[in-house]
Image 1 (tube, rainbow, N blue to C red):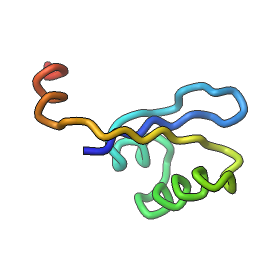
Image 2: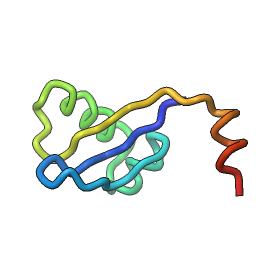
Image 3: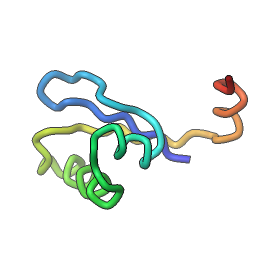
Image 4: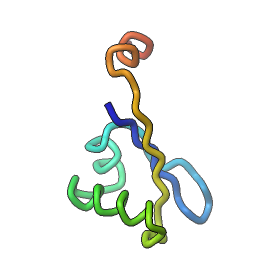
Length: 67
């Protein structure tokens, strides 16, 4: 499972974190636009957001953070 964290590029403030759909929703984007923003961020073409992408074990994540 991929875990995305979106940062404001200028202030380094965390804007959203979660699955791709969760972050896209939080940023007010469609999923396709989100993936485009992630790709552009990696090539420094996106001046608004920075993204950190982590691979996490979904089963372990659910076990540790289940409510």
